[in-house]
Length: 111
Image (cartoon, rainbow, N blue to C red; front, side, top):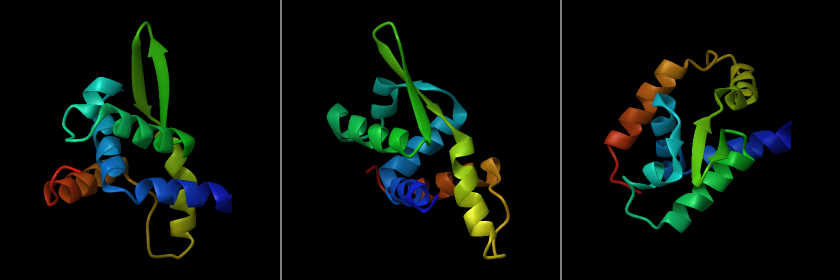
């Protein structure tokens, strides 16, 4: 479990990836739609998506020629349990997590 936690926290450690997760909280998105608000290449976005996929935070599925991304919120469960073991945090409330991500992304320029 420690290795998987390391992967999840490393994935969450990047502002671009956190913003992508925030976007996917609303709905599944095509890779090109995920890339649209960022001022980085599609290849760079694909690398971020690969990290999120490896961490189990999102899944990607191809429909025809379009690759779709879907949030996998259950992947945060082990991280939530680990944080809860400190007695300082409640389990992750996805609505609160979304508000947190929106606040974080609102204070920072596009990555």
